[in-house]
Image 1 (cartoon, rainbow, N blue to C red):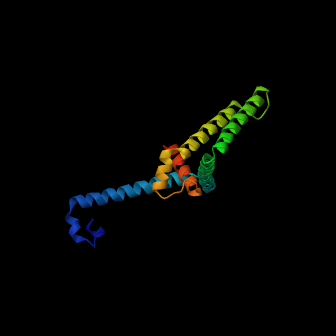
Image 2: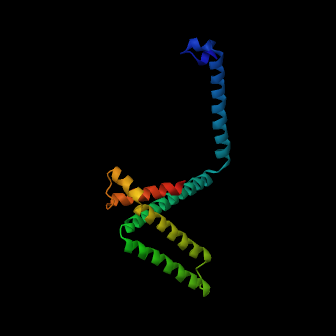
Image 3: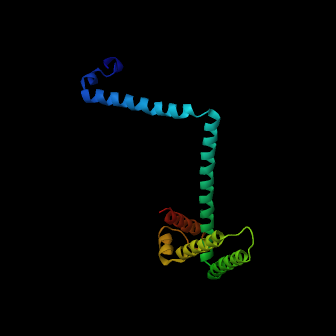
Length: 167
């Protein structure tokens, strides 16, 4: 072991240090050895397909998060206008009713899950509109210098909604 530590001869007498070095070397060999076994057993073309699949899934998830964020900004903006937010809730109800009618009439391409999704989106929109019009949210935004009538406020509310959804 002394030949492995030519720079630090004082440490060659430290038994704990030597044991830690041995453990680190063993751990390093184990980690790279496992990777070699796993990746060595998968042909390169298949490995590339796996990596592409994972990259695509991550990209789709990021896009879905961006879409949710953009929707949240729209709902926050609608909260500033009680008529607009009321029309949004009415539109969700009418849309769910139309899809339900199509389902009841045996139309292809619609399902109970579609109706449930519309109702869930309405709940989400309602929650964000309530959040945006909340006195506490407006007060906190003003404390941070954000005008409740600005696009920054919509971003602020969307960020809070995204945070709440991530819990």
